[in-house]
Image (cartoon, rainbow, N blue to C red; front, side, top):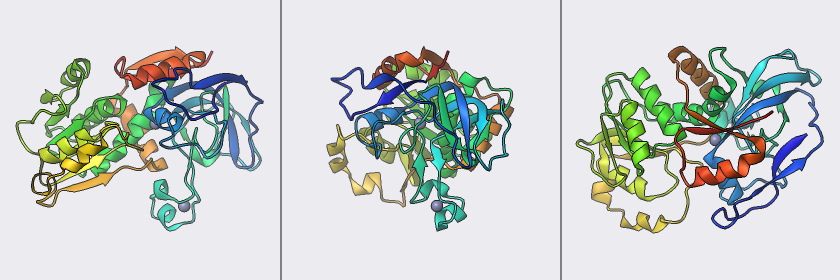
Amino acid sequence: MKAMVMDRITDLSRDEEPLRLAELPYPAAGAGQILIKVSVCGVCHTELDEIEGRTPPPRLPVVPGHQVVGRVIERGPGTDAFTPGDRVGIAWIYSACGKCRFCLEGNENLCPEFQATGRDADGGYAEYMAVPQAFAHRIPDTLSDAEAAPLLCAGAIGYRSLRLAALRDGESLGLTGFGASAHLVLKMARLIYPSSPVFVFARSEREQEFARELGAVWVGDTEDTAPMKLRSIIDTTPVWKPVMEALRSLDNGGRLVVNAIRKEDVDKETLLTLDYPSHLWMEKEIKSVANVTRRDVREFLQLAAEAGIQPEVQDYPLEDANRALVELRLGKIRGAKVLVME
Ligand SMILES: [Zn+2]
Ligand SMILES: [Zn+2]
């Protein structure tokens, strides 16, 4: 089968072809697993983190990609949850132990044995992939393959970050960064918290305009000051300066939710400008978001289907994965990028 394979850690500012087109053997559906013919796979910022070594795969080569939509074509021993032809989605959570304290509490995203799709196991930048049936999700009929794919990561993790923001309807929400995840969070927030004003901090004019179209009451640059202090802010940027700016914008007792798997080091020295009275005092909180649980994925897919949440997508053929990654890194083209198999 055809796959785009990651076989090295590299620097994307100098290397525009980090992945290699390869011919790989068909994956086998092991015990408890199903084999999926991939139809669409979303392209995520986390792939940049893997390629540049911020969250390196434990072994190389690996097939990246963790927003996978496809159809079941084969069942491994001991599987009966799906029948061939069923449409399923695979998210970042590829497996967890099911036995530890975190798994038993419903926080399987924190499991020490958490395995990530496309990092710890081969993912969806390929024609086929195998996955434990327990970690495959049915896709509601109202969503097309290309619409569903970005929802599996950006959408599900956005849903989790909005849950962690612990907002009540009417309370103000800020979003700093306005990429694939944030634009879905804005749509969700408008739905779940219809009376909450949403403030968006984004650097590019295109993103700002998009936020306005989606109903943000105020839009500014990352360094601008919102007209009021905010109850919760969700940060989806890859860097640190927006974190410091967001802390300054938080209301007393407010919470900053950092939705990033890793942060880049480029502007890390900004953290040294931390001014305790203005950034943290008055019981401000910072909480990170780590991965997603199956519950986040399933609840969000349902919500997206009921509410008609559909991401704007830009598609690329599998062979153009490198171009999609480079454009993602440069912040080109709004909305979510997906690879479409033939
Ligand atoms: Zn992702
Ligand atoms: Zn566990």
